[in-house]
Length: 277
Image 1 (cartoon, one colour):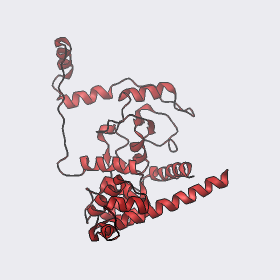
Image 2 (spheres, rainbow, N blue to C red; image 1 turned 45 degrees about the vertical axis):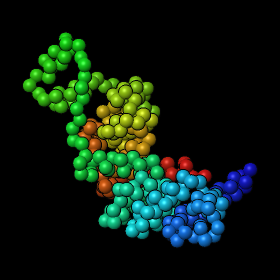
Image 3 (tube, rainbow, N blue to C red; image 1 turned 90 degrees about the horizontal axis):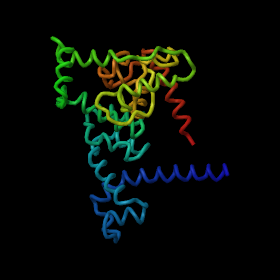
Image 4 (cartoon, rainbow, N blue to C red; image 1 turned 180 degrees about the vertical axis):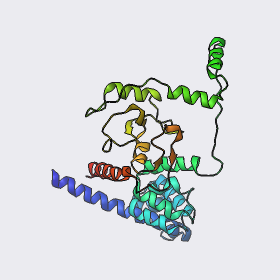
């Protein structure tokens, strides 16, 4: 049984390798219309019969390769990890930032890179929204009470203080996170990821202070995150983790002098090992 599994993994790896090579060749084959010279009705028929590629795979390969034609760093990533890993950043990378994005694509999974690219656009790219308007229909008595509670403070200050004043359970030094703390942490965002602007379901709990450094389960420093943002946190790419999530910011590069960085490296090695066949 184990031998069959190992053979399948080996053949599968080889298949992925050759598919990546085919994707790299497709743009030039399309440009020279080699498919026509060889008697095929279209580039899709050519790729399907000779490489087993679907129409979607061909379209993706041609689109991505066209976008990164002048970015050899990203082409190298495609050789190693395939076209799909580069797709989330094909429109975002420039000749000047190609090395930066190649590094990120090499280190991250596709889902992690998609999340990072989305946050990057919102936070770092010009034109990102800095405020958001919310309209609410409230009972007059409730609205009056809120105004009284707000007093002379602006609404942002009042709402931040209101959120920070939520009752939290006492910290615990147990092996596992107690249920009361889990429930309280998830309730803060109604089961939604705590990262600013993310609306994915929160699948995992993140110890912002790193449990390996501080073994206490402190609800003030535990946050519910989606899987991708949890992984980005352990890429050491989220700044201000000691503050509330609304003050978190994306980093371009990790702070390798932060003690959390070494913990994160071990965490990622563990995750990688658990997913290796």
